[in-house]
Length: 304
Image (tube, rainbow, N blue to C red; front, top):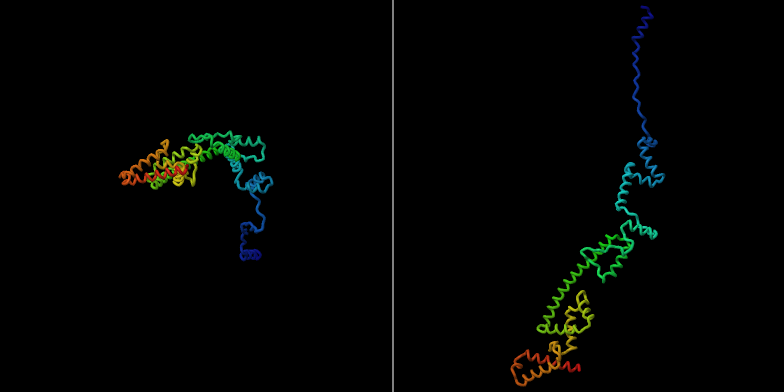
């Protein structure tokens, strides 16, 4: 071995073996907070694009379109509106400033008669609008037509009206019966044995009144009660009947000449008095009867 070769071998032994260079994996740099947002994906761009196209530059419409997740939802909402319109659930507003022709057409499309007298007034339970109710009902129907009420709405209102009035009538009739019963008990208690006579006198007196007066007495009301049934009215009218016809206090109304009948009965009782007959002197009833006859005779004489 030469010296050069020996030196070369020594250098090879003393120098370290060189390793291959290993590179670290590449990493993306961190995005700063103020860095611009990444470009939307193709799908995201399309989603924004269809809303923007439909909005056509209108920011308000764009916000409204943001409620829909996709174009399919927009179409679905449109179809729902179509269904509501075709079924009558969705109606066009009344043309307030429209022409008469437009208003007539709108009413026809919405099931409203063109005039108040075109409504069908066939009511429930066979109810027929009476002649006395007709003027009032005509005004009501005209007012309802002015609010564009349908035939069904008008019928419902009229059926409710007549149902309520029928209930009120039944309640009033029941209250009238109760009041008549209480008035009768009061008069019987106060008049006692004279009740029947007084009622006959009152009925005879009222029967002489004109028909319109009779109707007023039997139908007029005070505080919800029929005046003709009121005890105070009955007592006052009976007193008035006796004042007008004093003979009625002691003689039946069927007697043709009550004054003569009173005079005859007085003479008969006075005969008992003069004869000291017990039929008078021991009979309080006969004595009371005699006094009633005298009072009636005197009242008749005072009236001339």
